[in-house]
Length: 180
Image (cartoon, rainbow, N blue to C red):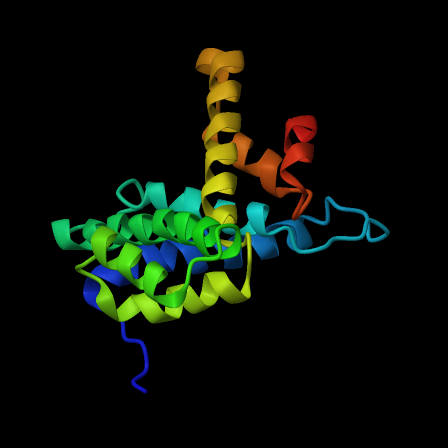
């Protein structure tokens, strides 16, 4: 079995998602800020964590990444992969799709990425409902940002918004409304 490899077009979105401003930044922010009392138990809220990672990928150009068209293509491809994962998850875990049905669906939707099919199908089979957390969380962060922009108008500050949603650490999405 060959190891997964990344191409140049995968590097920028991967950096955004996993490092800074993604998971590494997000996980260190509340710890370094110490805005969260130690007595408050934190679990892992996948929709918060993966949602943040997916949400910040949209800032690639603003942060000086995606300098070549192909660089942005990597982010677009992975957004498609995440979208297909959601449908696969429902098909496999709710409708009991057989392996071949899942592979056929993948092939009709993402024929340009056949090397990912087996891995992604196995992932959604072994981790039901996790696939949707990327999309659900990213949508929630965008909705909250839009609501704050509407509420504050010209006083809206993107840095302050990000501070507000990160300072308490991982929270269930329903609590993010309350912290704002």
